[in-house]
Length: 176
Image (cartoon, rainbow, N blue to C red; front, side):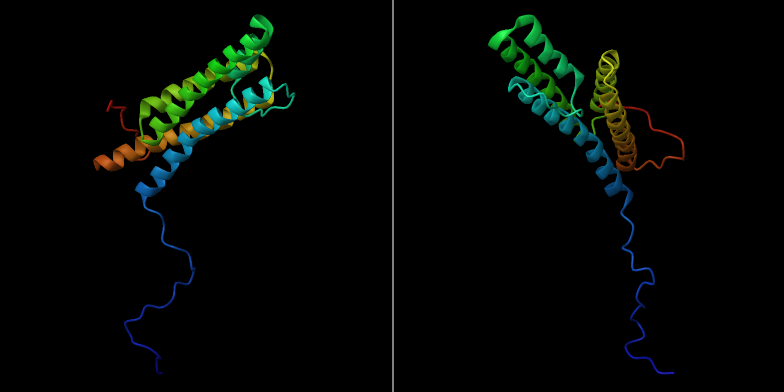
């Protein structure tokens, strides 16, 4: 039987699938994905606040309960334009905290993932209090993905240090 082509040419891959992504790249992608949730939450919360100030009855359930509380406080307690301005300023500070946590988390800072998860849980408790169940469910989803980012950040730190982790063993949290 004759062959057409040099014998050193490898046969085409039977599955046609690309090679698997390296662990380092995969963990980096998961860290960034988890961290980006903080930025999305901040952005949607600000959109909700602007819609509230504009007098719209429409809002994303994907925002923070703390900014909704701030908006309601500014409207009902302080009243007038002053109340709206104070509420919007508080909302910007809250959103800035979440953006800062997102940026720090994108760099793999474990503490920022932990602080962010605690803030998401506290915000979810505020939403449980007002019985906004759709927003509570969203918070649970966000917490799941942020926690995945946290786990990936720990795994990435272990990969960068060259320590192979056994299954089920998690490296200790070490300050940077």
